[in-house]
Image (cartoon, rainbow, N blue to C red; front, side, top):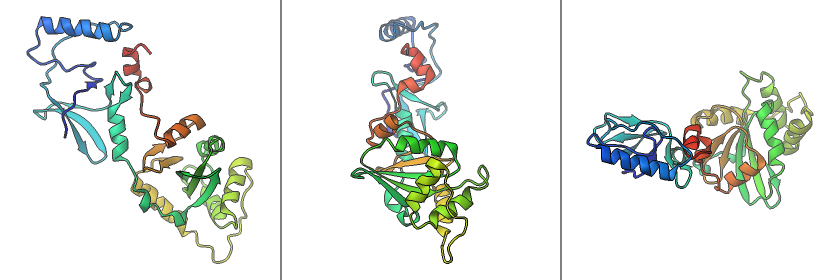
Length: 258
């Protein structure tokens, strides 16, 4: 645990001690008005929390706790000066995947440009968001996309058969792109001797990684992201230029007048 000198959303940018007096609160009111002139702050009262506040990690979760262990803060921890959600960034670090442990033999690769950047995708061929993601990926430059077929049959009953057909195609990458872009189905006849065990292993891999749905994206440094990203955001995310911003939280954004 480490001591934090940051602002919490719950305390609206400050933790006021039990011994706070009227002068302290007046000074805080003036400070808040100066920093966030577009926001009309109401009454300020002393909270029951006694500083300092510490960060505590349990599993892949992060929270903030006072020195007595009685009061916990869950959710975001916003640095209003840099417009970053520090808690979200910390959780992202905890969620990182060991890239070396990914079984590339159970994937196939589509290369765009030089392919110098790496993107790993767990994708369901019948997932509409996965299909939409393909249009965004097509706009990326210099990236190698490693696809792990991840059919979720509870949602898409035919996805496993389609995945088997893609995996057993002579050109897996082309079979994938043809199906995702034009819905051209791969052959229904699985060639004799074609082993589709890779797909079963991908499903187990997803469970180990805590995958909740598709698409799930993994960057070269192990960061994970779930769901669809637009090309510009995906490009920034690949280059690690997309911190979680205050504007993505409605309460914090309201304080800043965004």
